[in-house]
Image 1: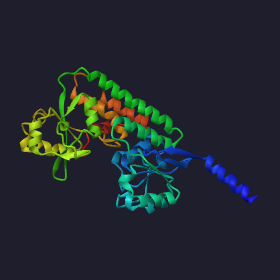
Image 2: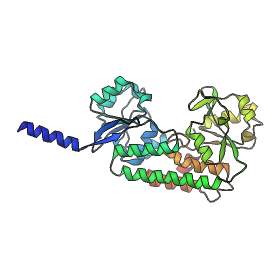
Image 3: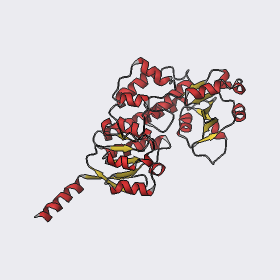
Length: 335
């Protein structure tokens, strides 16, 4: 009788499990009802909160972005002071999380992954998110893990992303005199720019701009590369976009750049940042083509009201009603 009961219990457990195929093609068994998940990167924390109940999320980060904490206050923290998930496998196990997902090779070695799996935690590798299509794929994969209403929300988000790309692409497709754009940041004492493999380069192209840094044929860099002052002056971009207020100040206050067209014409713009930075590999990147198109070709996009679009996005996908002041802070970040 006990053997029969054990077999029945095992059968029920198998029936209640689901199979998710990760980005390596590996089949991973996860619980039918997922109530506790740990995304390994901030962008996936954002996507998870967008798709499901935020209280399901257990973050390994020591601190969340200000707007993420404000809009999703129920995201749980593991109090991982180091901020490195690689040093907190025990903490993750102790949190009773059921699924860990993200670009695992960036975070865990094989021994650490084995520790998680030995503790009964499903480990799903999601490492393809380098362009808009892969971002949508990641959103769908995370929704598959979370289950329930997340599937429908992911479908709605992906349709919205496609709509924005189509809207912008169609309006700029016949522009002959395209804006020459340089993505320029200041990090650790150096100016850096993006390569053609960075998702920011795709957004620039979608919005009808020419990504100047792609004219450099260096292939040793995957995402960003150092660029010197002389190169920036020679490129002489029409528009500079940068990821922080600090970088903008460094650009504007650098005497050698005084005659660079973008600086001289007041065309240095800080990328918006809300729950997450728009220009990187995150769900909020769905708004980036709209913002770029508006600053590249304001005369073509006169009917596009960015403030209204941001409010609609937050209400639909974050279930949060932005105030006018919050919207202004997102579009004009102070950091």
